[in-house]
Image 1: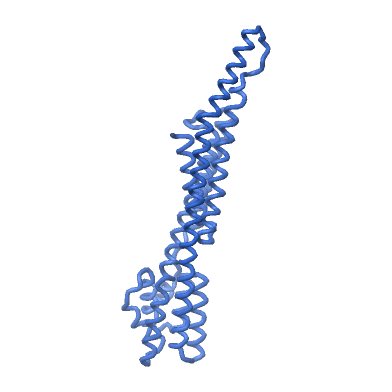
Image 2: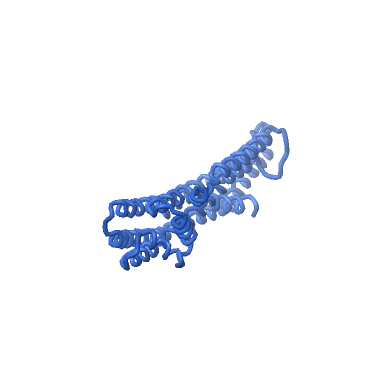
Length: 294
């Protein structure tokens, strides 16, 4: 019973978060539709509630998945140190199980609780290979699965486990270094995407402050000239016809840019769409505050 409890995976709240986000999304969509058909009156424009619905969907799951990925990255970062220490203990004649128990006394950051779980399982009589397998199920990343599979196979085959651990630790460290280098390199592109998004918003603000007022003035001038000439059958003035529609197009274009640029930023930086959802949420907040609140 204790072994089973220690081998349990971390609880994943993805489905719960998606369910809550979906419910909030539905509420905002219904509010927007009700406002559009004239059923209720709300503080913001109807389109804003559809934007709120989009935020409610991409924000929570994006930040949760990003937090999960960060925890996994912290574990993977310390994995080479753990494997190296286990290999060193093995060179002194210790078995794999004893080496893991000895290594549990070290400090490996976010990896320490997982190592202590493995040591506790071994002390209760769980074979070392089974403890490693349970560790793999709890963490569930491609790198951990690959590394632990090699170690388990070497242990079951009864070969020189210390040499295998040293090789695996070196490979793991190389992978982590490459991953960190890629993240640093992609940070430049992330900054460029954010800067370009802000430049686009500034452009929209300038158009709202200069171009649209000129349209309004032109519409008023046409209406006044027609009135002076005695023409009374003119259509609706120009600013009433076009300006609200143009402002809506500007706003929607910022929303589309925010979602698209955010997803692209996350994929470029980490290769994960969930990371992009976090950036999309941030950009939607920036766009909403800039164009609606300010």
